[in-house]
Length: 353
Image (cartoon, rainbow, N blue to C red; front, side, top):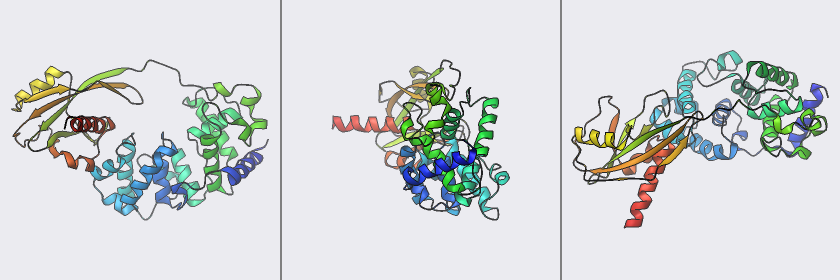
């Protein structure tokens, strides 16, 4: 099968069976395409849809996004994960509004925070109908199987070969449709496990299928044990004032820019900190331990709930801790574990009423 036939088959399949009702497909402008492509990085379509709709309702254009506070952006993003994406969107929006229009070249796009070669190619193809190769996870899977490319795509050698194949297969015409089609094929048919081969327009010439190597392609990342870390979240409550103490995390790193509970190495350290900070411990209890998994380690955490009263409105040395009304926490960007702890606490309190 030549490259033109590959593209023709994929486009014919897309015309008949591809998804065309996704929210970001209804108005393929550069801004909306950019937002959707960033959200879809490492996140499935079903999870992205409600977040995309809320985000676009809150920030309908790039000027609104650029002029918003980072807290507002992170609050709207909260729960979607990989928060560096939201920070990069905010920074990039501020850069773009200072420029003369949305960038329309590969070179200009990849200079922006959070935009790599594949994301830039998708934006140019879908929003500008300009033919560019892409190589997201779905496309890697389709190409790895069809051409039986051995090895883990994270290796430079394998990635170079897949980029070459992607460029060769990308047609000059119908760039927007082809880009969405090849991603859709990987997302809905050429699945990671139990692919629907009989529905695939390429199945009769797929080398992985012919060689019975579907399960081994694309190659897996070399395995290694996932490390784990432990911490205690201090949920310090001003009971009369119905407030909790939250600390803003540094701008970079895990949960960068989000509001979280102060972290301590153990329960004794957390209680000692309360006493040293003149917060009387009226009552204390611990919630059931939980685990939150990041891409590169597990976080095993325990929430220590400490009730105090009449706390002084002091700010910690880092100038990053503030007492917040419990009812106002939803306006902040907080990590999933923090939100889950607050919800669990709320449910428990309701049960005790």
